[in-house]
Length: 310
Image (cartoon, rainbow, N blue to C red; front, side, top):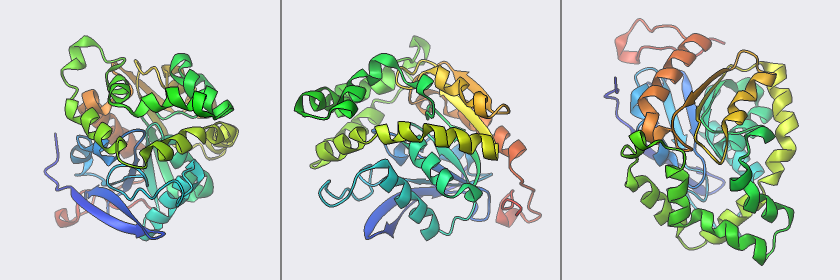
């Protein structure tokens, strides 16, 4: 059942830049930090947040350069995954978030996992929805132009990559791998929303810089795997099995380092929340209820769950 909790739309300042975020749920409930991917924003969580806000405090920021957060020019900000992860860490500190579970998707995966590497004591669990951490998860055809640009960035290798943030390129990401019976659940508003924001001045340089830096995430894959093995962090993978960007082998690979990882492949694509938000919310609610140290509050005025025990 969808919660009647209100979703708040707020901003805070990190390093002088405005960071927009959505928030819902009891302020003293366990926190789920929602980290979006390319080319979207916290808008991708619009159907998920109300479904979990009766049990958790949900916080979904827009990364710098995305959504309604500030988008300083590529000349004024170093658009790398290391910097976005650092900004995210400072964002959590600005909000006083000491402990939180992560929901990671697409770009949100390397950002969130870098945050986990830097502050493993803060991360209580991970939900990965088409958020990759293994070479086996890279779709061959989808990644070919990106890998070519990473290997040798020049005007010729940049040009094919530019198409990824066009309206057609964004529609492809939403529609590919979604079976016909679920196609009419896809809202055209989603890709038009993303395409409009991706067409703003300065986005060409911002997004090319980030895509060009994606290779730095591959270099950290061994460190991510060691983090998994060392911490045995509870992990739930809910994956659109039709995704051609991050293929299902990437979901299954988590079990190599986390034998207790729970993996669910869903009949949809890269943006699984567009068609399967109710199912994903149910899986997350069950997973976190079992794997987080939560307990009922005696007072209904304070929400049904207490903060994680320390």
